[in-house]
Length: 193
Ligand SMILES: NC(=O)c1ccc[n+]([C@@H]2O[C@H](COP(=O)([O-])OP(=O)(O)OC[C@H]3O[C@@H](n4cnc5c(N)ncnc54)[C@H](OP(=O)(O)O)[C@@H]3O)[C@@H](O)[C@H]2O)c1
Image 1 (cartoon, rainbow, N blue to C red):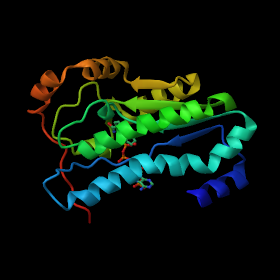
Image 2 (image 1 turned 60 degrees about the vertical axis):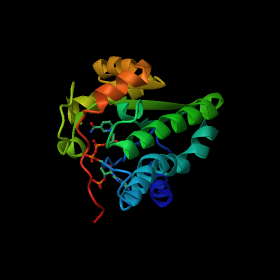
Image 3 (image 1 turned 30 degrees about the vertical axis):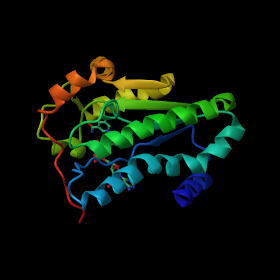
Image 4 (image 1 turned 120 degrees about the vertical axis):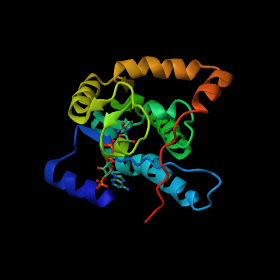
């Protein structure tokens, strides 16, 4: 990432916006030993990947006193979703990482924007065996992401309908959440190749 960032800066200069978007979503179950490696891959990609993406730009952006670091989190980070424990844990960690970074960067003028999408029609969701309410096509989602980045809002759920769902999920008592989600279909497990 450092080499790629250095090559980019040498050619185009320091970017105004850096988006940490790479992510994977694979189902895991704690009873399968082999899922530990999958869990690790999810955390490495979805959380440590953000650090690796931003790191090469942060010092120069701080010195310039402007720029936007954008992290793509997920509504899946609001509660622990059954079968998606690794993904939910990674996205919850991503949200907290981005929050800490935002506060660290506040005085510098560099903004940190967290986007938490609901469902978007991409290869990542194509394998999901469950209903995906308020799902957006990728081009529509991208336009809304761009608007959120332009606004520089600290945390945005896209689409807004999922923002309401996320708020309800966040305050739902455990007994209710557990009861509803115990019946939910799981994200498929995919063993590493
Ligand atoms: N789709 C949704 O409903 C949804 C909802 C909430 C959040 N998100 C988040 O949105 C982001 C994009 O997901 P998507 O739906 O567009 O999924 P996607 O179609 O599967 O695309 C994932 C992207 O991440 C890249 N990537 C994965 N692992 C990588 C690695 N180790 N190093 C570099 N790049 C890597 C992939 O690159 P290659 O193609 O080269 O492998 C691909 O460009 C992810 O962070 C995902 O968690 C998606």
